[in-house]
Length: 399
Image 1 (cartoon, rainbow, N blue to C red):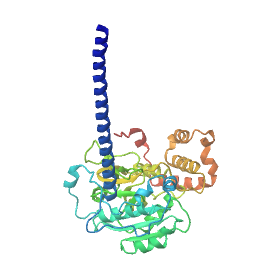
Image 2: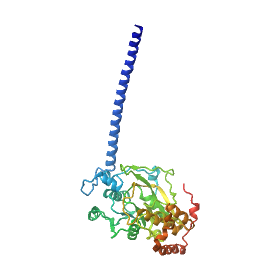
Image 3: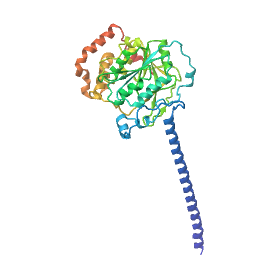
Image 4: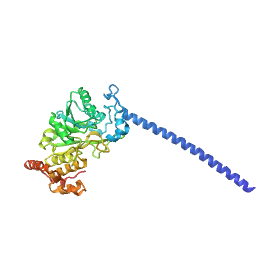
């Protein structure tokens, strides 16, 4: 009898625990459901904010091209970023002002030089190209923006031909240069610089978004010293959701020196650009040009600065979507070897060993013996001008 009472009492306890556990489980499920709904709603709101980011109530620029049904996977595969989403976002969207607050209070000179903004592209996505252009048009003081030059490096996409010509015809400050055959980024930039009429050359990639107040701080530094070559802080535009990710800098607003620029976005006095010899036309397609011009600047009396008050967003893709006439890796290796041969003197062997682990690359320059003559011409040119100052390599302190 006592045992039965014990079981009965024990059973009541177990039943209570079981019922309480079920109630608690149901409560957890309900809470989880609410959390999931909230997360989904938040995700939808964030997606909507991305799509609507920057819509002006009075004027929202639509894509002038008709929408076509394109496979999303092909977009991602061929362009290495979310082109499908990019095509839905206004080409004149606003983005958050990510500058340090003090930047908006900084004063600049009234007589800053004008600039020619140069975009070089080949088969660029329509929305990213136009968003790049409109960010410059919308966020640059008109009296400082001399022109925008689009250099088409022999694109194959139909929408970048007559349709692009028709579209840019409504903007007097935009003109397009079409190269008859593929030259690559480096020689395309040389062509753009040759056509520019502004006092300062500003090179930008064709998948960027310039932020508010981006131009004035760059031109101010060039105005103060024409041998200063200046770069904006490059902020990442997500290749997945197209959201601008703010870059925090320890030095809030003051310019700081940089040994080697990224190369895609910078401003340089036009006369100084040609004093340096512009880009080496012997470099092919893409790769190494940032090293070459950085070495030139530091060895020829100039300085490279990063300007925290100038912010430009950039889509960093998982891979390079463009085709190289020759093998891409070998093209870049060959460019780097050429730059090392011209500029690094006693350090060139070290650089050559770092270019590739392939033992065949140790004598990479010898594979392109036809370029030796031009290399020695370049070396002779800078030796005669007493341009070399290699001490910066060993004494530069960065950070």
